[in-house]
Image 1 (tube, one colour):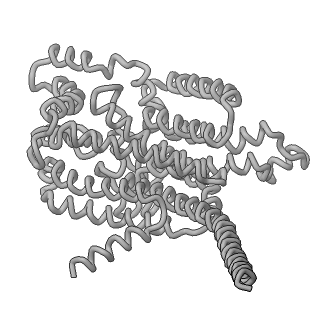
Image 2 (cartoon, one colour):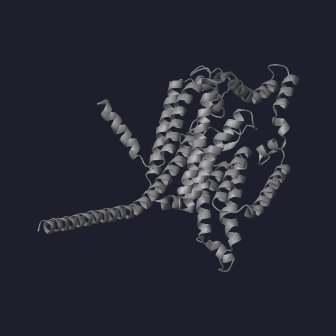
Image 3 (spheres, helix red, strand yellow):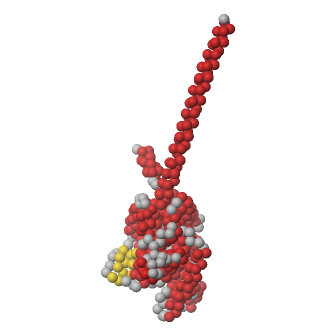
Length: 473
């Protein structure tokens, strides 16, 4: 019985289409998420007057929903379906960002603040983190736009046709309107809530169009425009310094205010227990505790459930998940997590190489760079390499919107990998009959040769008999 079950399991795995390594990576990350969320949310359970078991149960539900999204995307059999939906990615992104910028509060839709910045939309009882949606939506949109541009299929909008008196747009204006302007407008919208997210998402978008075939020389003009947009945003903040439109931009420009040394000086200058002292302590408590967690983890870690810094860092299960993993599972556990993301990057490169469709190549490359890039940034920041950005560990950290959107990204990658594999199998199948016919022809030739040799033997036998008779006579 056990043997039959084992055979059924391996038959199921063998029949699973798509890149099996990517399947293994995403499933291992999901399992790690459930285990780590259960162990790292002690402080959250106290704050919510709940239990770690109930929080882990909620994460299990989110993981199952994410797996469902992966399976839905995985079972889509037409690349044209993804390409059709991707053209609306910019409209979706800019619409969500406008809801945040205008602080919309209509019916069941309401803009909400996270860490004193407008970053989420509450829809009924669900909170949607806008930047997480924008990441995936814009990569898919740019994949569509670059593909259409390269194949000469971009249609001039009717409104622009009125301005140009029926003349189609030139190649340069097509890139400006369909590629560069969407990137800049989305970056400006994100900058209202987070400068670090603006830099990260903007960088991934530029890398995506580079993979899609937009040359480095062609990005000189957009690069100059980016500097101009940044200067414009700074000027807008100077107009009303008391209520700046981009508050995180001013903080980033004055890095001294965010340095650990500055907060330590404030703690020394104010009496212990004062409001100023506590504010300064809160600013450095999390990054300092993250470094302590990594130091105490050592090579093999303290063991599951033995973390102490989870009671100190309020968002250990989000922004500092990698430090928590090292504290409990050591550098060996942290190294395994890093290997999973690097393996995803390697498999993504292999899938891209096997795709014969520019849209598919660009989409897979962009999504893989998004996942691995955010993972590496999260790890570097947890190790105190670079300023705090608030980027979570993909598919592991707590966060419903992030988990579900990365599930969609993995589903698209697996679906395209399945299509690429089928293409390779078809090519192999087309070559196989030729090999079979060659072997059949060779076999027939060998049979003829054997028959010919047998005829020669019969003739030789007859000649020998005639000779022997002649000698007798």
